[in-house]
Length: 383
Image (tube, rainbow, N blue to C red):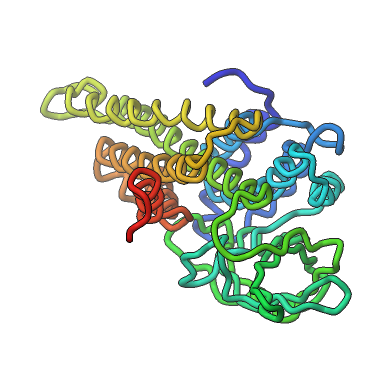
């Protein structure tokens, strides 16, 4: 990977790596990690320098997220959602629109942003909502509905969310930002899942959560759009998410290499690193992963440089996420196979990485929608 500016030191990453097994085993939030990441300036790393941050580019953030995910995937996944909102505001600001500049200002001031978008069974994702956005008569809205997979649930202070306003002649998707202390917000349910446990991605019930007029950033018609705000969500979410799972897969290869060099074959009286089949399997995993890095780097660079990819932008963004998560799953599986039965133990890092990597299957865009988008791009919509 090319050199890039770094915020995360190796000492910090090692401390985060050491805590990851405990967070996973105890199913607890990564409080110590978050405190150290804040102190290191990582939550403001993506904020442009003119707003008081380190000003890392999207491409540079993908590298940092890979490094963090290699240490603790669940920590990286949760922090990812904060970075997504910062990235959205960067994308919008770079296109001459100051409507989301408050995100950059508040992130620089220490606020932590969560992503309150997903709803159970809603495959429209960004393009339609079952939640309600009710006008307050003063240009603001209150939000009502259940949002699932709210990473950073124990720690966020700001949440970007949306709901449908059906009070006018035409429905509108209303996007706004609420505060934890503004009322109308409840963390609900349990987070007892297979992997990514430290993210503590509880559901959030919105029951009149208010967003004043100056925190309402979009009122747009339902359905696909290239509005810079929606494009910003899609681009930063898909690219940074791909980076997390790529970093996880890279760590799996590191663990597997170390393991097979120590593990010995009784039959051959040699380390398994000398077994041609094991060598081929790990080489195959590394070859797969090697192709993902340049794809992430190029598409991140194109977002920052405002390259016009035309109607292929959305399909290509969804493809990078799909390819990264599918490759990561296959890579980790190959690593588990190469390391033998010991990797099946919960005490082994590979076991945790295998459980964590499975979560990539459930983030949008899923494999079905990716193929549907590409089929439409190539063949037109189904008549």
